[in-house]
Length: 299
Ligand SMILES: NC(=O)c1ccc[n+]([C@@H]2O[C@H](COP(=O)([O-])OP(=O)(O)OC[C@H]3O[C@@H](n4cnc5c(N)ncnc54)[C@H](OP(=O)(O)O)[C@@H]3O)[C@@H](O)[C@H]2O)c1
Image (cartoon, rainbow, N blue to C red; front, side, top):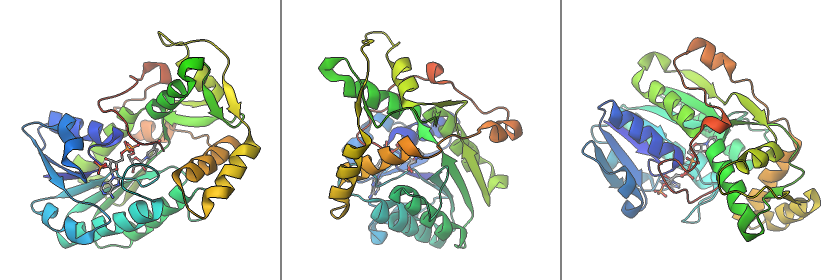
């Protein structure tokens, strides 16, 4: 049986769907059973635990052969933080998986490094380092930005004005990947033991600016074609700095927006597809917005 921590989330839901579709039994870990109703089914068991609470993880490991970690603490309910979830929570999961002799497939982010300017990505790097140093079998799946999330954020920000709100100038190219393409890589990592000890980097076929993405979002039925609004970089800097002490979600979002507006976010996704040509490689216009679950958080 496969344990999917984060199985209620945008990516986790697709992973659960893919595993169940091939007849694999899945245990979904959530902090709130009511959040898992959309993944219910004959091959799905839902359990209550919190990755920040190591003791809560021991009982949910029974009979588990592989753990997928699709959690993050960038935003969301429960006062989560990247340090408490992405670094420490993943360390708890890896400890529990090791004790149960289970492998771990860890979701991380392309560019993960202790020197990265974004706290979330530093914490992913810490999670990766801890996993590599553990005794358990591992596969790391690093992904670029999820296009469905960003299309939804852009569309939602337009509100009644009809003008999407873009944080920063929005002219920096960013690699966007479809959640289902990432789920396909996670599924492959779960079922193929020859991928243990490997880092799989998954991105989409397009590097697009947020202005490009807004224009594509506005081509969808029911959207307005009014020009986007922009939140200037100095405002983002002020928000990021003012909230940094408190470590608030809004400060993290402003800091992330600055990084996405000013650093190289492009990625060449071809290598993974050259070695695994069966994997889907979805363009922005080919992805289905919304997916299978209503998102609650941003990243
Ligand atoms: N979004 C992106 O653009 C992006 C890009 C690259 C990589 N990733 C990675 O892909 C993975 C999935 O991201 P997503 O955007 O699909 O996530 P999401 O929809 O925001 O869902 C977050 C998930 O994390 C779980 N979670 C949070 N804190 C938890 C805790 N303390 N204990 C147990 N579960 C907890 C939530 O479960 P409950 O609320 O049910 O407890 C939820 O299922 C993450 O590892 C993320 O870092 C995301």
